[in-house]
Image (tube, rainbow, N blue to C red; front, side):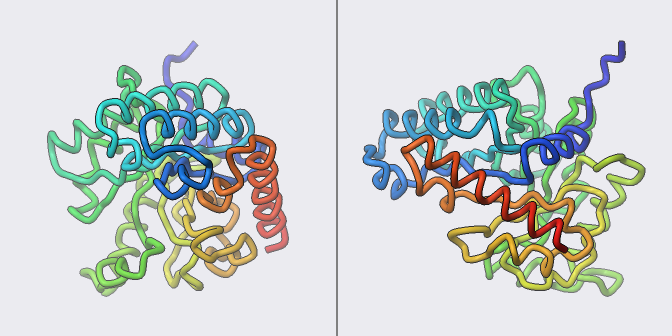
Length: 281
């Protein structure tokens, strides 16, 4: 038997096909904790996180903890995050750590070891990274992902309006910087089947993305729900690549807590709407 781990792209394709094409964020905003009747402290954080994992980890394709909302509580918050990652993966969800790390050399290597090394307590199935120190700066994470069967989601065209001043700027060769990054991702995914393990982050709120999204990898699409985009918008943004989209919903699902049944119903409804939009495209 081979010791080579199954690639993340293969595992993600299977999860999307069997559980539905949806990623749900675990974003313990102070305002959400309050809305759930919880205090903005470690006890509230732990209760919130445990409830989301219990409600969704056995049924959604991807759970995406936003690291910053745990880091703000220091080491105790990180301990909650570690447990959430472990329990979510044990229940069958793929865990995408939303950390948006980006650096160079040994520091990027340390980030890769944090999220993409099975020996780390924060070992996740994938991590978000920023390529704007140059795509080559991501090499330690890309290599670690291949070695350990993980994924890397690279910021390309984000949903925040400020991103355009960098991402839409023209790079060498006359293409936008975002397109240059997407081209690098396509190169990383060349020959992978059924799906590469290097994904792009492309906002669902962009209208026509205006770039070539045929990277043979997953397309994480934040912006569904509270940010204003709907599943019906996805074909217009992603075109022929819509079948590889992993829509990301956070507050749109989480606002239905702390009731577990309501969280599950909301996630199932979003997944059904995404499936209908993709199949009708």
